[in-house]
Image 1 (cartoon, rainbow, N blue to C red):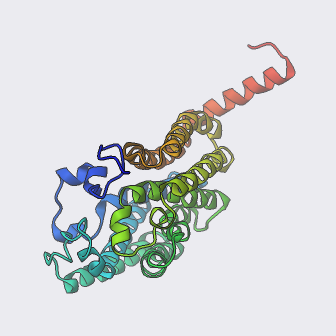
Image 2 (image 1 turned 30 degrees about the vertical axis):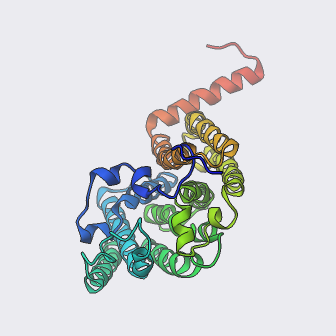
Image 3 (image 1 turned 90 degrees about the vertical axis):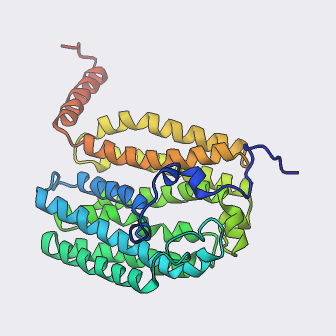
Length: 333
């Protein structure tokens, strides 16, 4: 029997209760469909990809064009996603008030806006960055709308595992913008975002599984239940933590400082994953993990940028010198 206390997942959970800012800020219809709340994290991972390259820091004009083009491409993807799912949104109580199903914005206006954003993003990237960065941005847009939204989401509970490639492309865009190519470090951050995405998204899907069940979307919590989902979150959480440590070597410099500052982030993530595993039905633990996972990825990207500061390189030199003295038994000076 399901408890009626707020500590147990219930059908009354809505996204506004998980993300409080949604309750405080009501966006205009034309901006709502662009999903602007998702864009800052995409831009943060773009910066992370830049920070991993030898081309960091970028000249200000190229940095602005990269972030501006990335924001426009992400906005276009959000609008196209809303257009594709407007009928589905209209059948769900949680999303029926969105701009398109409620009639506050016409599909024609939304489509024109999406095409305009796409063309503007491509023009900005090609003229101010390079063709590789522009192509990768458009690849991210297409993979989100076509691969994830249209093909995977309605067909398989592993939709976010494969479809997570869309959210993992921004680090490649950042690396391409910095150097004109994508090196191993850029691919490392791509892989890290891919592994992070399922645990992040499934924590939210646990809260909203009744909505997904009502419209036949086979999210993992719907198909397998909370207990199996919590175990899957644990596996991906551990994989994320292990892979995050490779940033020590992925960074051109400052890796030791990154590794030191990374420890509390990883410890907290594992703690919250373990807590959810012990009580998969607990709404507060699922909500807490979802929120922390967002902060975690922002934190990783911030650490990558901080690790490229001159003081981080100095810290590395001092730390390596200390380790060598300890290994050789030489006295400290």
